[in-house]
Image (cartoon, rainbow, N blue to C red; front, side, top):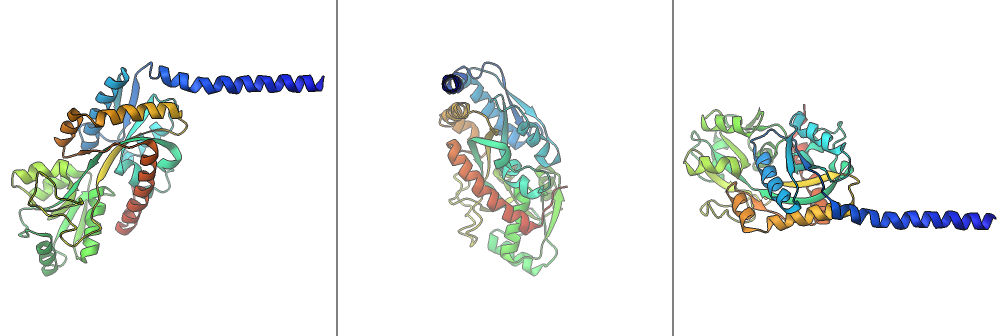
Length: 327
């Protein structure tokens, strides 16, 4: 009797396991059968929101289902982060993250439990957002070397502005440290107000995203000194890289990517990844991104995971260097 009962129990367990093995692929085949929500932890209208809406529109077309962008800004992107992390891991809530909201946030807010590796599964990277150094109209420098010489001749008189703990703040501080300059950081709530003051001569230089700075450069309102890429930017062929200017460590892009709550089934992750990558390879997406001075970046979930781990280490070192602490 005992043997028969054990055999029966084992058979039931085997059937359950066998059924479960078919359940997940079947779930992926029917996914998505309702709208998908893509949380953006920044306000509408900004650079990351723009990238998210491009991705959501294309992804929705490829999945034959609406992908709705929901902006959940505030607290240095941690509100949107936590809203997405606590969602059901069923593929119907995604986070459109960035270097700021995924790679920097944990180092900036160490007490808030916002480590992306703990709370999310990587889906796909989507774009690279290059940086460029510019000076305002009150600074006579035309090269990085001239800026350094000017700053050393005027110790304590120059400053740079950026949002606290953002890539512009951290990269500008890295440059200041490596160049050994006595210049002052001025905190802002974001790039828009900091660039406004740079144009007005209230601040003197910054390293910020091309998306926000290129229009000002092309209008002659700001002077470009170097791009933070391995090679020169095609639209600005006369502007050298930081490597050419003697700063080999200043090759740093901001980036965007999609993650899902930890525990989201792998077949759904793979389906999302395939759809996003397919869109990134189209001429239409490449052209759309180029209008925002962005580059497409396709990847597998595993490649994004490795990339994110590397980025966490790099940006954490820059946060420590800058002494930045989230408020």
